[in-house]
Amino acid sequence: MAVTISVVLLLLILAVVFLRSGGLKLSHAIVCGLLGFFLAGTSLAPTIYNGVSATAEVVGNVRP
Image (cartoon, rainbow, N blue to C red; front, side, top):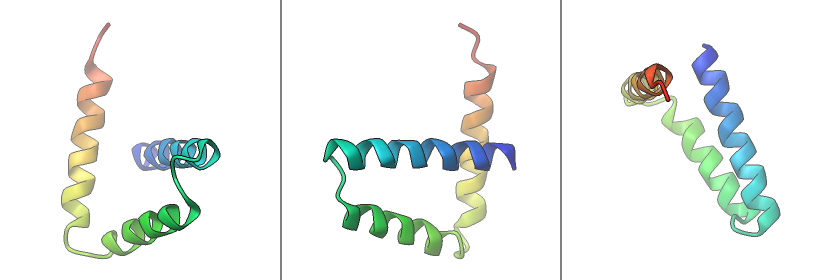
């Protein structure tokens, strides 16, 4: 659950930065949000979740 919240916050921050810099229009942000919302209800959701979790684990284990 903590990974999900972190990813959501990161994506939200990136979306706000892109909106403010003019690189992302509001209509594009709405379409991306709707895509994520509807994608979460498909059978691909567990696969995407496992991929994001595995990536977060790999990144978390990297020692500089």
